[in-house]
Length: 381
Image 1 (cartoon, one colour):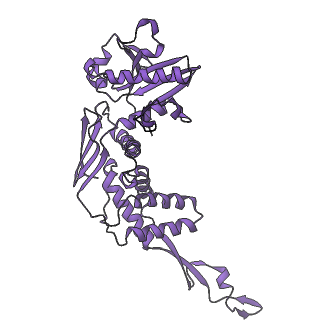
Image 2 (cartoon, rainbow, N blue to C red):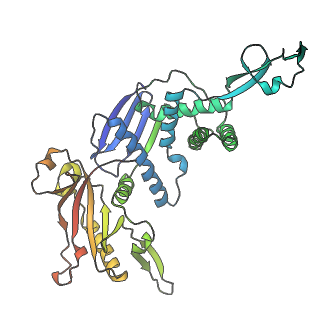
Image 3 (spheres, rainbow, N blue to C red):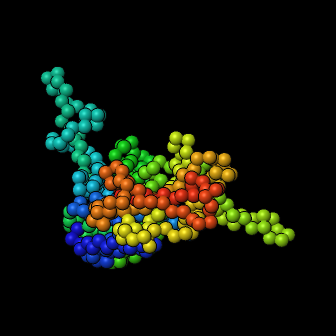
């Protein structure tokens, strides 16, 4: 698609990140630790997929105020575009029959005709032949419309021009019903996959949606996506994770004790009989190298509270604490820093630790020191 693409690196994870598309101009708002390379389109696709992670978490945090229509089915857009590039438009083919001496003979239908007998031979002079032709029915129109939506939203990531102008001829409700009916009646695995992707795209569009030159997709807090990346990367536990959440309570006079809220650690890693509390921090230090961009005291105290809870309430004697910040390892300021302890080809770096002055040396625990690690910002499917 011939759209002008501008990659904009955003300094704070609390600012908008995502896409803003207006006519032939695309603006992609990315984390500042995002390293723009020659094959940036591949990484932008992964970035768009990661937005869905953040949006789903935002929905949970907002008690379901957001609807699923806010989350783009990126995988389905990609599948439909690639399906079109490889196979062209999708049509359901209709088989027609006629009496003719040319074409593929349908012997089952031909043999039902009355034959001629000549010299002891049976001759069928009325051959029934078949012809398969593509039908421009509602399914074909639905494929074209979903392709149009996919192309408008992420088609600029492909070096390919879509020539045909496509207009919607059916309502979203009608298209969804037609696709579901065909999905339920086919035994073709590829068709099943295609129909499921079409449904994901259709379910993301309002029936009364107006055509607009402006399209926006993104999140106002990318932190949730980074938290999930770290959780997956380090293999944090998923089952019974809630038992590690400390809770606060209110007890008012003549009232029952009421839960105020709980604290939720990002990642809990159990390894070698030790519990590691990993906190994913989408802070600016990873590209500024400035101490003022490290986590503040309230974040340090929160980590210590997690350690206290796990140590005293869950009776775990071996608790460790760590902040994990994303960073761009190709920046000269990090390459030239000789104070870093480097691991895994600089993908993981230890820079120091944090503590507080109200914990005396006599009752200090291992988790009272929160170790700072930098991890190369890496998007993955």
